[in-house]
Length: 464
Image 1 (cartoon, rainbow, N blue to C red):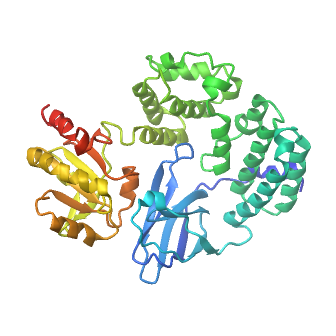
Image 2: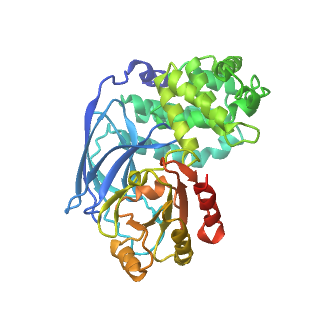
């Protein structure tokens, strides 16, 4: 099989149009009694995670997850903040044997910092399994790049790529996996760009203009993200002199931008043009001179009116990504246990504003701020809910602390096994304060600390 025939797989192998059940069973020693979550990036530009499923890990460390898939996906298996990433294919059965690991936090540090990779000791892969194929290819690719980087980047030696392509075709000539063929194709595209074997228009024509948009393929989207980064404002000769700050803020901005971008021959395909526009809008969002509300409005238009379902998904994720914890957006929901083991949810506090405080008993700064919070609580306790969420690794530590502080009579909750909440609120240091209004929307993130203006902020909020 020669190179051309190998890549004809891209044209003749169909993408599955119906769902099949994929089943994952496994064992995770050390994680008994915990929850394992299966997540995927909603799209491969923003990487906003979506939960697909979850399961309890039993007393023997075993778990089972079943999902329906239409196409192969790149998924993460998460226990607390530790994760393993795998490719999953429709209709296949996997057995994951995780390397034994201590999931119980013995040192009191932020789990966002302490997170580790879950090592897979055994995965029942056959020779046509996508994980096995990609692993084998990546070994060849990484060795080739290590040995030939200067020849590609400095010397622009195209023949090195041609030789490597022949090796890859020979090594995987019996493989008929569409996702894998695309994966290889766009890995090699990256080598061509590195060696500048052709100009950007020629590379774009070969890999984007005449090819489908492969939203789920990690290497297609990785190459897309590299190729079109700052494309409109820097790379494209046809568009880089447009007044994009003004264009994004005027009536009919979507139609105007699509029309302006069409002047670039690389972007003549509407689906690709719209996707490139969104990627660049996301980059423009925090650039000086751009109106963020106008960019969000543009993305909202695409999420509702685009002719391409994949682009709608990307637009929705971009809005979530750009507005996370932004003033006026819904505060992430939670249900946690209070000091009496009673379940308490964020929605229970609707009707009055809420001050959230993420803290731990081992954080000296947290304890100092908590003492300073007491007079603020006494002043505003009838007008605002005070809720302190302990991230200690043991429920009993929170209870013991509160029992020693008889005058701390506001609401204390424990994080328990809901570690995802720390990620939802992007808790990277303790203490963290967040102000939420009576409708459950963010008022200030992060909020001022008691030692530095919190009282004045609350006074201003409740007096409106």
